[in-house]
Image (tube, rainbow, N blue to C red; front, side):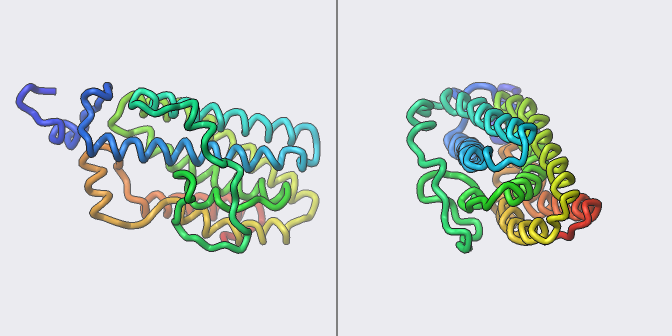
Length: 252
C-alpha cells in the first residue's frame, strides 16, 4: 500500500489485509460477523447431520455422513482459529452454543437468526429422516459452494486462503448428496423427495440474504463482497433447477 493511500481507498481498489492490527474498526466488525456466520452455520449443520447418521440405509451412506460431520466441524475450526487472532475465546465459543437446537418443522422465520448464535436461518429447522437430510444437503451444499465462490475473494487474506481450502471440501459434500439422491430415486421414493425439495427450497433460498444495496455497497468498498445476494441466489436457482430436472424432480 502506498504511504499516501488510505486503507479505505486501498481496499476499494482491491487491496488485501493480512494482520488484525491493520484492520479498521468497521471492517473488523463486518469481518467477524462474516466469520461467525460461517462458523456457526457449519457447527449447527454438523450437529444436525450427526443425529441422522444412523438413519443411513447402508454402511457406505453412514460413512459418508460421518465424514461430512467431521469435515464441516474441521472447516468451522479453520475459520474459528482466524477469529482467535482477533481475540475470540475459541474454546468457549465452540462449547457455549446449543448447536443441536432446532425450531419446529412448521416454523417460518425467514432470515431471522437464532437467539443463541449467528447460524443462517435454514439451520434452525430439523431434518426428518435420511431422504430429507440428503435433499437438504444437496440444496444447501450447492448454495454453500456458490457462496464460497464469493467468500474466497474476501480482502482479508488469511480468511480468503481458508475459504479456498474449504471450498472443494464443501463442493464434495454436495456431490455426495447428489449421488445419494440418485440412489434414493432408484428405490422409487420420488414423492417424498419432491416434498422435501419443496420444503427446503425456500429456506435455502433466503440463506443468500436480502437485496439491501446500501449494505452491499459498503461491504464491496471494503472488499468483503463482490457480487450481490440476488446474483448469487439466481445462480443457485438455475444450477439447482438443472440438477433437479436431471434427477426427475422439479424446483421447489
